[in-house]
Image (cartoon, each protein chain N blue to C red):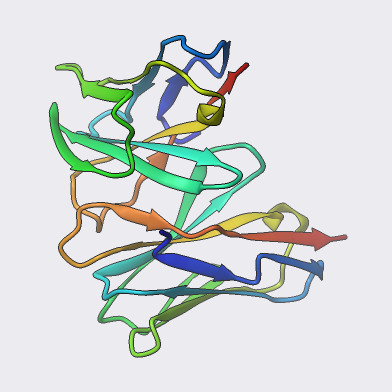
Length: 114
Length: 111
């Protein structure tokens, strides 16, 4: 158990819908990362927040957005869902923001778009 | 595009044998990390090696880094059935604040 929690574990929805994925980082970790893992694209970095501020951006679509709240939990919002958005979405956390830091991954949310 | 690429894509060996996985990357890096992922689960950090290090050990794991060849290898000695998983290398690009993961090597340890 990494100490990172993600809810829900599974999510099934229809195209065009909007969903919110939630992540609680490990106690004491200030940085949160979101990743998307799919069979064809592999593990793709989406976005990083550090202490409430956006720190780095990866291959995140405009239909996706995220935020980190004052209690440091984070939410990833996916809207106008398409079939291709079906994937495992992971949240990870680390103490600091830099790439030297070990990242602790949550169990993931499996999103299925029908 | 992927910064790191693992080789082989899949590896199947007998329990007790050593497993070697390789990772190649394209641009200069600050560090390289290896992660393990059991089927459908979150990734677990294994080891981090900095660009000025050439070799690092952790238990049955040995990681090497050759920055001149832009490559790294992960050696798992005396493999066990519990080592069955996918292994990913992750690299940063100098100046970038993100890790980029390779496609992974799927390792199967046969009893």
